[in-house]
Image 1 (cartoon, rainbow, N blue to C red):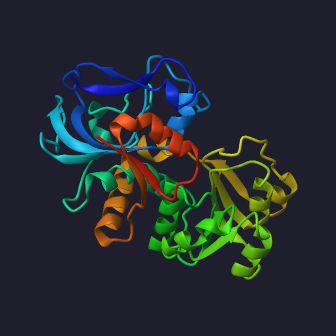
Image 2 (cartoon, one colour):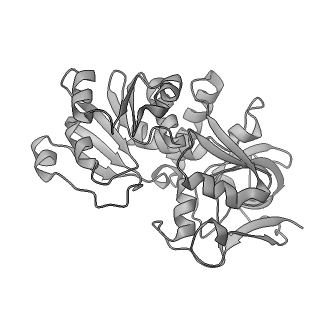
Image 3 (cartoon, rainbow, N blue to C red):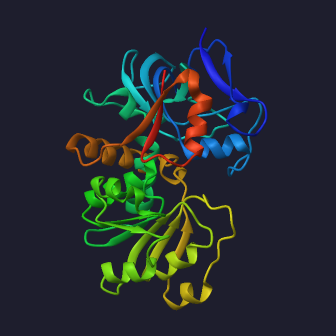
Length: 329
């Protein structure tokens, strides 16, 4: 009997439980996938704990990123067939689909066919990170060659993807991390510069790196009191994209600096790209081309077997990883 993970109440990782249930044949516009690997994402932890931008509807499913083999194809689906190697791009609500299972349904528009040389674990680690980075940096901020981008929480899977996406277009990625413990790893992943924000003056370091100009783009999943320093380090007419709130403390907005230097501060959600057919196609092409060229390659921090999904969530919330956590099925 196929298994999936669900939860009946919000809380810590311990609320997750396995359920055995038949998976129906795919409806029109859907495919059914025999899952080989699942990518974990911070949003899933927030959703499970009741602190995400949408509330769970119980019993709630989890997961938006997986890789596997097409098991069945629903009516009206073109270009996909049983036996195809595919990955699921996060392009749907948690209320509609969940990828934490060994046999799952997914909308066909969210499917990307995989290159033959891309293994299951890497394939499950690609789409949330790289499409988020592409959508924010390339599609929205129009990051270009020679421009500097600040990347807080740079050791996360999205942070590492942002470093690689920036390098792919010739920009200068500056990785921000709390201490220097992860500095060498971030440089190996392509960061042009690393700033340990608890050990160095962020604004002074950015001024040094940019010769007083500031960073044209900042890509922030943290918020909190440190946001004011990020604003100060951004160039006149620069853009700050906020895609998370890892720091639960209040986030100050220095209105005088925003006005005085004509800054743009906006929120960014992955679904801006994945719910628009044209943007989704462009994102898939950018990522697949980058994988083929070797310019984009996910870093896997650790894998867990499906049976240890609770332990995997605990590890995710410990914040010690550099790169992606993947669950194998």
